[in-house]
Length: 162
Image (cartoon, helix red, strand yellow):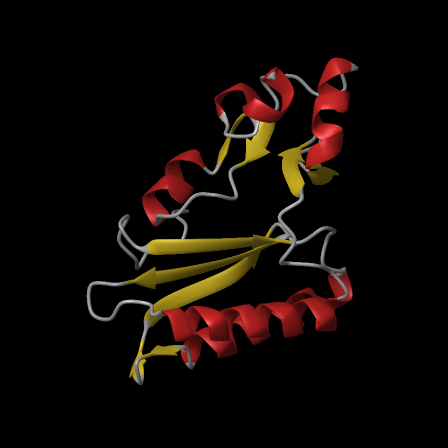
């Protein structure tokens, strides 16, 4: 299934990754809060054509098709306040940028600090072929095609190759 199939590849994307998995008993509630927020998300008093979801119980992904209305600074500030409140509700931190995310051998998302990334690489716990999530994807097309990529092809490689 194509992610957010009703939106074009050029749509803007924001990915907010939690420092730990959203607890299972809160997952549906978190998804509903995201969808409710997105339904009412505006920029310059105009509704945004937007969607969003919680993926892999770690990632809040917000998508906006800016062909009809662009996201402004105030609407981004408002989304940041929403994510802070959602973090508090779920007991996770969606706003920290100090983590890297990869899929383990069982396909589960693992979260490690950027500081420990180099150490884990040096000790052979991860390698350049391991699948890492690119949390810097900024368009829906790049999310669809390159969200999960080998560490060696990721911007994260600079943390282990230096």
